[in-house]
Length: 173
Image (cartoon, rainbow, N blue to C red; front, top):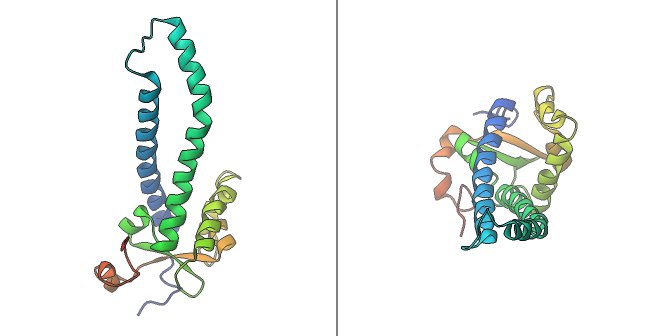
């Protein structure tokens, strides 16, 4: 049986999971931004009328900050909720990895939120906190160290049965 130490997920798998999550969230962002812009334009909008262009710029200036804050909330909620509830986001699910606590236990909501906020810390110095996984003996990024979490590969035997076990897989009720 593979031990906890041998099942820690490497940088490549984690990076690909992040890319999948960012593509999903990017599509969601695009949908919200498009819908918002379409709503702001209205049915009678004309690009030729300078008064309507001025009105559009005013609407955009008032609407951009709330929209960005809403999208930030969606991103924070996505990572925090799915990490605490399921131990994995869509990208991690597709790649067979999950986030666990120090004793391979479920991640608490507070840990998941700390890990999500830790992404900013990991990203700021040119992504060094994410690259840290490559040189760390425990394969932890700075956000993992901050939250006391690890990312592990799921056992092959459990992958097919995750949906059937209570509290595992994507049992969102």
